[in-house]
Image (cartoon, rainbow, N blue to C red; front, side, top):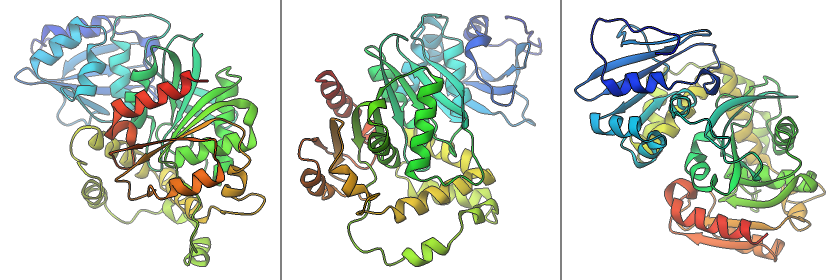
Amino acid sequence: MGSGKRRDMAAAPPVLDQLIARFDASAFDAPAGRARVRLAVDDGGDWDFVALPRSHRLEPADRNTRADARLCADRATWARVGRDLRGGMNAFRSGRLQIRDNLHLGVGFLAATSGTDEPGRLELARVRTAMGNIAVARAGHPDAEPIVMLHGLGGTKASFLPTVAALADEYRVHSIDLPGFGDSVKPLRARYDPHFFARAVCGYLDAAGIDSAHLIGNSMGGRVAFEVGFRHADRVNRIVGLTPALAWLRGRGWTPLVKALRPELGLIQITPRPVIEQAVRRFVPGGRDGWSAVGVDEFLRAYMQPRGRAAFYASLRNIYLDEPEGDEGFWTRLRALQNESLFVWGQKDRLVPIAFARHVREALPGAQHVELDCGHVPQLEAPRETHAAVRRFLRAG
């Protein structure tokens, strides 16, 4: 049981005792210094793993206390998790194990109870940078070629967990929470524009001791990846844009109004959480199940914080106001990009229509393109095809 004790009000399923016996506190990151992770076993009751600064314990779930994260599975799945050091993440990716609420703590619990101390094991951590703490999920041998992954608007590092798992055998992969999102720092008066995020990425590279890395970005994260290439080409090897956000080519009639709106208004939240949650889960296809449900949980966890809302609105505002042409225009600078690039387009993407591919080909003739039968998040909607394309592209370098 490590340094903790379990109250003997009832007998926990043996597999939970087995997991807690393997718990490695050095591999578990609790941003608040303590955490309560609820472990639900079908026909075996609910149990709370309580992590404190100097101790931990397993106890019957306290129904009057809200858990920070919840892990739910049947007995057979929990048994596989206990037997197989990688069983937890495998069960999570396949949907047999559900993780809800705080994914940083839920996945962190699986990583800390895996029983392995290999250099390339999955870790969830926070890295101190010049801008503040940047949260990361990382895996792969420390000496392998590095990849840094950047999520989209409202997302977190969770959207790249399947990619972390898919590429960690060959690369050192880092999926980070951009500032303002997930478990990373949320500066109140930051601009949250591509330049700001590019500085944050370079700050992470500095803090992690990485001279240069491949960048993979989805949606807004793709736009940030290219911004790093524009401004800091020497810090980037190859760039993969998964349905990347691109500056609008058509007129933006709402520009004066959008410029007048202040993101700081997001500090005030007058809509109750249940109303926001219901609306988001209706908007996101499958928002109550699987990876979509995890993504909604992660979005709400940041959005319900005043600084998280301000960051979201500021980022959204800057996506709309992104200048297409001129010395600092996106398309002007794309034509001069030095880094080899791959664009992955979703044929069903309604946010970044595949018609943008023609404009990218004209601006950057040397770029590679892949079209997939998916929507806006290829790494979750078509993971096998996406990861195969990414691996081929990176190996070619």
